[in-house]
Amino acid sequence: MNNKNKTSRMRKAEARNGLLFILPWIIGLALFTIYPIASSLYYSFCNYSVIGKPTFVGWSNYTNLFKDKTFLASCKNTLYMICIGVPITTFVAVWISIFLDSKKLKHTGWMRVVFFIPTLVPTVVACLLWIWVMQPDTGLVNTILGYFGIQGPGWLSSVKWAKPAFILMMIWTCGNQIIIYLAGLQDVPATLYDAAAIDGAGFFRTANSITIPLLRPTILYNVVTLIIGVFQWFAEPYIMTEGGPSNATMFYSLYLYQNAFQFFKMGYASAQAWIMLLVAMAIILVLFKVFKFNQPEDQ
Amino acid sequence: MNKMNGYKVKTFLGKFCIYLILLLFALAFLLPFFFLFTGSFKTSSELFSKPFHWLPRHWTLNNYRQVFTKIPFFRYLKNTMIIVVVNIIGALISNSLIAYGFSRLRWPGRDKVFMIVIATMILPYQVTLIPLYLMYSKMGWVGTFLPLTVPGFFGNAFYIFLMRQFMIGIPKELSEAARIDGANEFGIFSSVIIPISKPALASVAIMSFMRAWNDFLGPLVFLGNDRLYTLSLAASMLRSNLNPNWELLLALGAVMVIPVLILFFVLQKYFIQGITMGGVKG
Image (cartoon, rainbow over the protein chains, first blue to last red):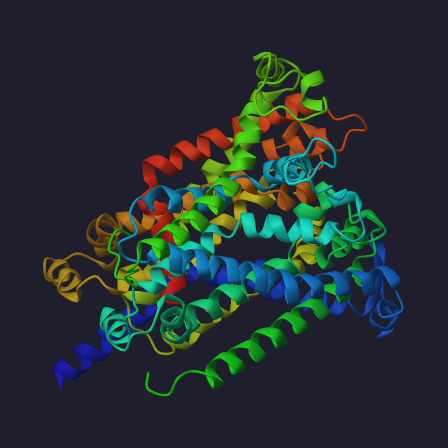
C-alpha cells in the first residue's frame, strides 16, 4: 500500500516536472502562435488600416480578393511554381542524388559539397547574385548560351522568362533536399540492388522500379517542404523583380506583404493569409493521401 | 555519408556518362560563386563592360575597401551578431529544456501534445506575422531587436523535434543512476543529459545561427530604424537604391558568404546531421 502511494506520488512529480520543462513552449505557443492565429482570423473579417480600430465587414475581404486582378495573378504564379517548378526541382534533386549514390563512382565527395553550398548563401546575397547571373547582356547564363549561338532572353525583365529564371534559382538551392535524399537512399537495402542485378535490370530500370518507389516517404517530405516554401516565397521576388514585369513574378507572399506593410490593409492581408493556410493544408493532405495510396503493399 | 550502398554501375560508358552529367551540374552550381568572387575584384566599368570577362583584367581591392568605408559595415555586423548570438543562446536553453520534457519525462497526453509541436512546423509564418506586428507595435517593440530575439527563448518546433529525437535515444539507466545518487530532475537534465546531447546542441546552434544570419523578412518588417539594420537588410536597401553601387554589393555579398562557408567546412558534420535528422525520421 505504502509502495503504491509512493509510485503514484512519483508519477505526479514526474508529470509536474514534465509540464515545468515544456513551460517555455506552452507560453510561446499561446503568445506567438495561438493568439496571433485567432486574431488574424478575426482581422480577416475586418477593415483595419493600423490607424484606428478594426471594423467588422463580414466576408467582404474574401469576396474582394477574388475580384482583385493582382491577387488572382499571384495565385496563378504560385500555382505555376507548384505545378512546374516543384516537380522539375524534385526531378533534378532525386536524380542527382541517385547518381551521387551509385557505387563504384569515385570522387563524388566534393560534388556533394558543391551541391550543398548554395543553400548556405544568405537569401539576399543569392538574389543579388542571380540578378547578375540572369543579366540579359553580360549575365552568365546568356554568355554561356551565346557560346552555343543562342540569343538568351532578358530573363527577369521578360514576362515569359521571369518565372523560369526563378525555377533555375530554385534548382540551385536544392542542396538541402539532396542531402535528405542521400540519407533516404542509405535505407534502401543492398540486397534489393543485388537481386535486381541478378535479374539483369539496368541502372535506370533499377532506379525506376526499386530506388524511387522506396524513396517515396522522403520525396513526400521534400515536396511538402518545397510547396510550403513556394507559398512563403518572398525575399526573391521582392528583391529581384518586385513582382514585375506586369505581375509575372507577383507571388502569393509578396502580394500579402505589400497589402499588409505597404498599403496597410491588415484585414485584407489577413484574409490572404487564411486562404493560404487552408489551401496549403489541403494540398498537403491530398499529397499524403496520394503517396500513401500508391505505396507498395509489401512494406 | 561515406557509406555507399547504392546500385553498382557496371560498364565504363555508363560510369562515364553519369560522371559527366554530375560534373556539368556541379560546375553549373559553382558558377554563381565564381562570379561572386571574381566580380568582387572587378572595377565598376569592367563589371558592366560587354562582352563578359570571366576573370578581372585589373584586379582591384577597392570594392572591399568601399564596403568597410562607404557604409557603416561594422554597425550592421554588430547588429547582426547581437541578433545571432541572442538567438543561439535562446535556442540552446529553451529547446533543450522543452525537448527534455517531451522525451525524458512521462506525463499523461505527452505524445498527443507533441503532435501539436509537429503541426506548428507546417504553419506558414504569414498567418501570425500581421497580428504579431500589431502586437509588437502596441508594446513599442517595433524598431528594436526584441521581436527578433525574444521569441527565440520560447522554443522552435523543428529544434524541439531534433533534440527530442536525440534525447529519446539516451538509455534510461543513466537517469536512474543519477536519481539514485539523489540528483533532482534539473540536476539530471543539466549534468547527465546535456553533456551527452552536445552533438544535437551543436546542430541546433548552427541552424539558429544560419536562420538569424540569413533572415530578411523579420528585420524588414520589425526594424524600421536604419541604425538597427542587419547585413542582409542593409544589402537589400543598397540594392533598391535608384543607382545601386554594384561593385560594393558584390564585395559585401562575398564578405557575407565567406564566414558561413568557413563555418560549414569546419563543422560540416553538424550541418548535415541537423538536416537529415528532420528529414529521414520525420
